[in-house]
Length: 322
Image 1 (spheres, rainbow, N blue to C red):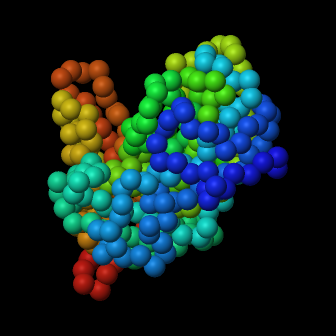
Image 2 (tube, helix red, strand yellow):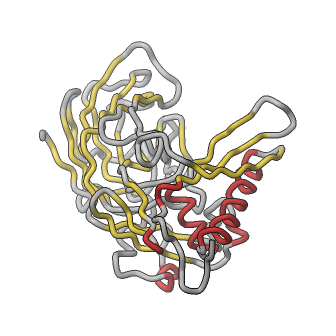
C-alpha cells in the first residue's frame, strides 16, 4: 500500500472544489481510506431508536479526502479501482422521518427506527434468523464539481457522489469525469449491503476502510460515471428463487412506492414481520427494477425479494402459521 488517509485528519461533509487536498498521489498509486459511518459516529453498536432524535444532520455523509491526483485535468477520466473493503463487524439501518423525509414511504413511517446489524461470516443478521449476504461498497464516491461553493452530498452528480451503486464492490472499477484540476477525489457512506433503491433511505451503514488504485486517461472522455463490475447481481451471487411485487403508475417514484408497499404487506402477512422491520429489510435486501418504461403513460417497477435470506422456519410465537 502506498498511502493512507485517516478520517480523523481529512473528513468533510460537502462537495467543494476549494478544499485543500489531504494528499497528492500519482496515477497508479494505491490509497487506503478510513471511512466513518454515515452519521459521522453519532450512532454506534449500542444505539437505539431513541438516540435518533439527537442526530445532527450537518455532518451526515462524512467523506474522507479529498485526494489530489497529480496531472488530472478537466475533461480527463479518473479511474478508481476498488481493491478491498473491510467492515468493522457492525452496521445500522435507520428510518429517518421528519425534517429529513428520507425514504420512499416516509409519510407512512412517521416514527424513527433503528436496527443494528451484526456482520459476521459474510452475512448481516436480522430478526427471526433472517440473514442478508453482505458485499461491501461505498455509497458516496466521486470527484469535486466544477461549480464553486459548497454542495450537498445527498444528491448524486455527474461527477459521482451519492451513487449508491451496490455493485461497486471489491474488484470493480469506477470511471469519473474530471471537472477540476487534480480531480479531488473523496469517498464515504459505506454500506455492508443494500437493495437497489435503498428504499427506507439507508442501507446497512457501516464504518469501513476502502483501498483504491487510481488511474488516469485523457481519451475518450465521458459525461457521467461509468463502471465495470462482475456483480454479484443477486444477493447470493447465483440465480435463486425470488418473490416479486409490481407497481404500475405514471410516476416512477410512485410506482416504486406501490411495489414496496405491496412487498411490505407480503412480509407482514406471510413472514410475520412488523411493518417497520419489513421496510428496513426492503432497504437492505430488495432490488427495484424498471421492468417497463416505453408504454406511456405508465411505468412498471418490480421489487424482488430473495427467498434465500429467510430460514426454513421464519415464524414468531405470536404469529405466523402456514
